Image 1 (tube, rainbow, N blue to C red):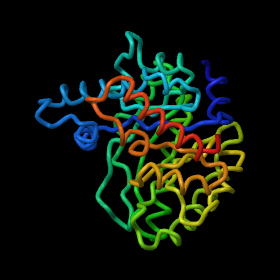
Image 2: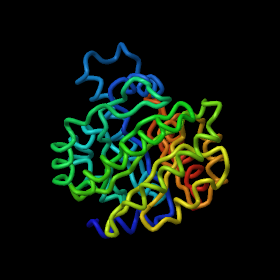
Image 3: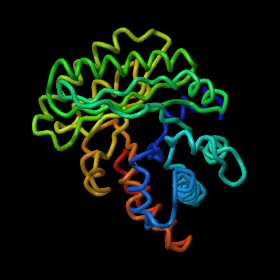
Image 4: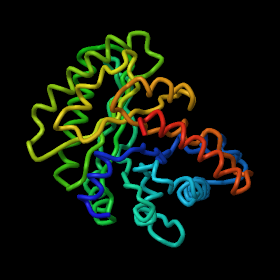
Length: 295
């Protein structure tokens, strides 16, 4: 797939984006969920090798190539690795799956009710490498903890500022100002978040677009204006800690949003499953998530 084909797939594809980008501190938890204990690996290299085995198994599973997965978000080491003897981005594109790369370097301590991204000092080199490897877009996460106007304004401004750098590098930025689903004031804060995003979309160049990855809102269809905005290629939803069933039920109420789930996609997969069992579990999750994403 070339860039135009990948853009069309993400804009119009009937499916969802798989989040396969666990990294750093989240990797041991993901491996435990998969049935790989901490005793089965030692050090970062072995840990990342184990998680790459899991991701390779997902990507090569027949159900992953069903056409219902239109994109996948990767961690840098996964992008640099191989699947079936081919660079991971190429293996994905051969399966009709558009590759994205996670580019943030973690979160700062909470201030003004939000956690901004840490300085992205590795971003220029990572963008150059990602473009060279044929990646389509990027993803970067920051987190809103409460309905603090100053904090929400700062988090959206940071996302759009970095998004411009990503666009300048020829990649599609997926902005992810996640709203903590446990926050008691989330409904109020999501109104603020939407207003700030709309303000910044007005300043996006006419020949540019962004993607948005947002928590499933308390008020159904709150983000429909963003879904329909000409500067937005696609709005995707994170599962945010919900189970597959919960996330799909909530997502299905939001017209035009599609899923970009991690836990909701992988929660029933286990290392000791046979290939048939693994594919059946993955296929069941893919079918449920795709249906909620208005396939």
